[in-house]
Length: 386
Image (cartoon, rainbow, N blue to C red; front, side, top):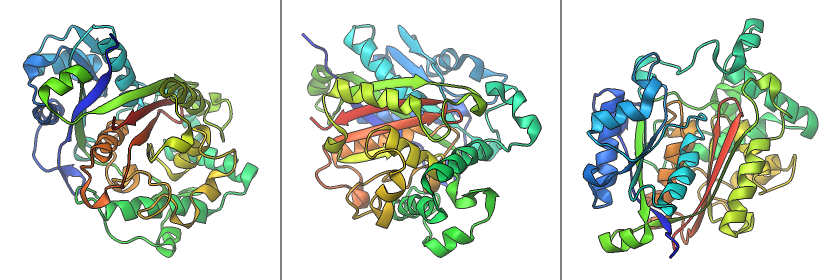
């Protein structure tokens, strides 16, 4: 019998002004999120036999062996463990890895967690030598905004990108955030304010860039059969894929094309047996506004150079025909260094009908796509409500 894999619990820690509402170490905030997600699943730490996590956590230290450190702190002895770290896309990849492990019987209940105190500790989670950047930083390229600015400049050269096109993404994110009490930035934002925001690295302004916040989240997966026995609402994992193409931006195959997202998206859609037109709601990594445009094209929602028109007229905002990043995303909700787990949490809530004022009606199929590194990696999940 096929072991269908479902998500049965999600949770994140509350923030106040981008910082943890309750104090705690990176391990403690993950533990709190994990316990909340497990409680929602009608499970406990005793039931967890698969643990997946990623994060630097302030190297050197516990972050060097993230899974081992977290398991010891939680007091569990998992028989399946995965600390794959491909940046912000890691958690979409973890969903795929957990699904394969559960399908093969390597574990029955998988817990995915992430935690960061990026704002509180001012920790960037990287060193100059990371990702081959010793060959790029010496020339004054600011990280990471400079790398994304290169991609945006290339896209503008090829397709005529204007500031207002990027602004559509930022404005839509803020309008969703205004419906999300947990969002860090909820004040009104219109195009004049966007255009007046400081230019950080041409053509990217301050409001093209994600927030820097704390954050912690957790996801629980098991079999559909187990979920039915528990009597909990579940969301089905129907397809997934992952890929990465480069470390340093100088090795990116084409600055205006996300080959990793093309590969991961195609695999996820093929596995799920659906097309982009079947997606009711999208949660797409928005580290920068240009990341969204490149991702929309790579995932097949529009052709090369068409994303700037695809997002026009607030198409992705509340009331638009393509609801996207319904928490406010990394641009207005939170971004604690690696945002992918929060995209998954919101997708699950939307498919269960638990998103309150920002709930998208009749959302049955969700696409979640994470981007990691400096446009280096991509991981895609397709989730359904039944």
